[in-house]
Length: 192
Figure 1 (cartoon, rainbow, N blue to C red):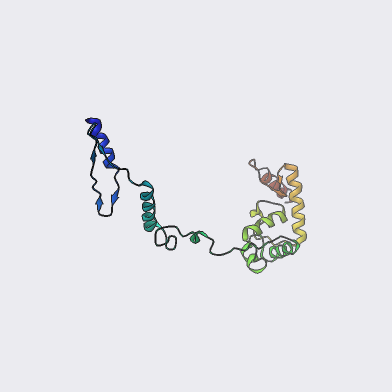
Figure 2: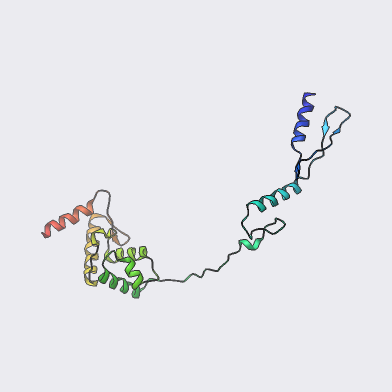
């Protein structure tokens, strides 16, 4: 009898919930052992109804149809993005040199606004690093060099970087030992 009661409890727990509360079902009694046998619910239909109710409650406007099914047009792109091909060429390089000459190293926003509006400030900074040949532009803050001064600085940085093993991707890169800072301090001390 204990086993039968457990089976009855499991079957009763599985019955679906209707609109007005718990549905009452009549249990059919099996003559052999007296166990209650309940007809199995239509799970596929219940699942669809449950999903439709959840969509009605949780979906943003326009995502579902009135019957609760998903409106696939909701997921299609609303606007087409056209990618404009930008290439960095000699004209852009000359404008960057002109911008550094007039606004100084670090004036990226002004250079972007006045000379190179298609390029973001970070791209201009990276291009300037490659022009000067140095990853750390803090040393050159507000420096307004001519094109020939930039070329001379590039050559100096390349020589120093190759000598110290700190020349990477076309620029002088500081290492953890501070070798670049020491060499630059020594070079400044020799000039004085």
